[in-house]
Amino acid sequence: MSVASAAAAASAAPAPEPSPEQSFARRLPKIELHAHLTGSISRECLHDIWQSIQGRDSAVNLQDPLVAIPSDKVDYDLDTFFPLFSSYIYKLCSDLPSIEYSTKAVLQDFQSDGVVYLELRTTPRAIPDRGITKDDYVKAVLNIFNAWNRDNTNTLRAYLILSVDRRNTVAQAEEVVDLCIKYSSTGVVGIDLCGDPAKGDVRIFTGSFARAKAAGLKMTLHFAEADISASDAELETLLSWKPDRLGHVIHVKDEYCKVIKRENIGVELCLSCNVHARMITGTYSDHHFGMWRLTNVPVALSTDDVGVFCSPLSNEYALAAEHFNLSRAEIRKLCTGVVDSIFTGNDEKDRLRRIYSQWDGWAA
Image (cartoon, rainbow, N blue to C red; front, side, top):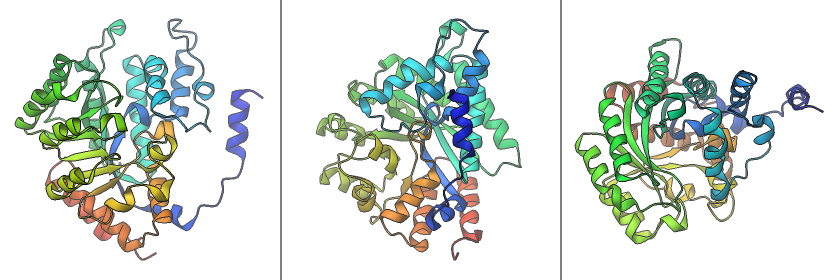
């Protein structure tokens, strides 16, 4: 059977009846704060891009995404996850039309899943073979975001966070800070530290993130994502930058948990990503969400890379409700608690509070 035939057969099969938790979670207005742009591109969208370049660009010699990234494969770990981007997805999305097309598709996918507020992060990319600078890349993404936000028929509002990769040099990190500052009035709302946790020494970026903070930028950091990036030296360095939010927070000693609680730093937690990639020991019910949800720290359930792990935000809420026996009141508290940790101003916070106060699904 061909790939197309297999995909058609799969789509023709009746979908399983959603559970009550899934039905509720799909309707629930949601806030997503830890999604990566490129990691959120669906396999179907990648397939569309692949088809569009077949026959007109011999330089792109890549396998069909529906074959290269099978729909049932979600067990990417930290050793196989990062090469997926460098050796495949970046090569496929290598010109402005593909970047613009995939960005629109990602926004549509989040909106279709009931997300009403999205902070999407990306590392500025230069593509010299196409004459694309990092500035060109950021402008192209922001143009899509701003056109989307101007369309009053869209229920989702989307904003951009620019990422420093752990593998960057100080000069490259300074470029990201420059771009954040340059576009802070047109949709860039913060700066991130991300990338392979086995790479780099984050201490070299202290000056760059201090400059970003001094410029008024909000800050989120990938924090203790793996054992190798959870040394006392690294975590003390990252906390010294005074971040506004932290992502993953997996391998964290009690002393650092106390700092996070004392400073009321928001945490972005990704259940499916952590389970599928074996970043935690055990399964969903063992996830540290169970501990953080009982604190006063804002907890943002997030997808991380929905295009890779195939779990939309509605599924993350359904999993949390199922495995931690969350009541509707507890889910409401979780959702409203995230509002104060978003990186935009009071207008968006007021809009989100109105959405949650007026939503008719709490008693269902």
